[in-house]
Length: 169
Image 1 (cartoon, one colour):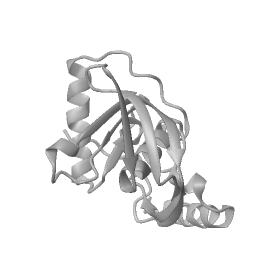
Image 2 (cartoon, helix red, strand yellow):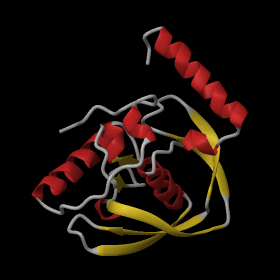
Image 3 (cartoon, rainbow, N blue to C red):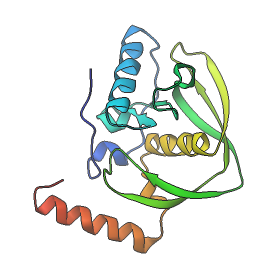
């Protein structure tokens, strides 16, 4: 099932999500639906709050479905270490059509649980490190624009307000 993606301005995107506590068939179905939703939107990551579910759950696939072994499920993720910095264009499915050069760690290590509840620790570099940080931010109620300069962030918010007023958001 493909879920509609929640856009910036919705409360669920700006509040910390609650922990995943049940690792059952319902969670597995949600994960399957999240991957389907992410691929349909041409994303490389999707957090549960982006589909209106306030749970600490995200899916990541930096190959956009090209490598089935690259599919990652992170329940209750916590970034445990970061190294260096990269500044690259970043976007978000909840802020369609907005992209900006965003500073993120070059390398990141995350501790989480997989879809069965097993604890996992994963490290990534480049796009994968960016995805770990971006999706974990979502679960903490933050969007990538919070990492931009005040001027750039306000410019994006102003454009969104205009679009909303015109019924385009």
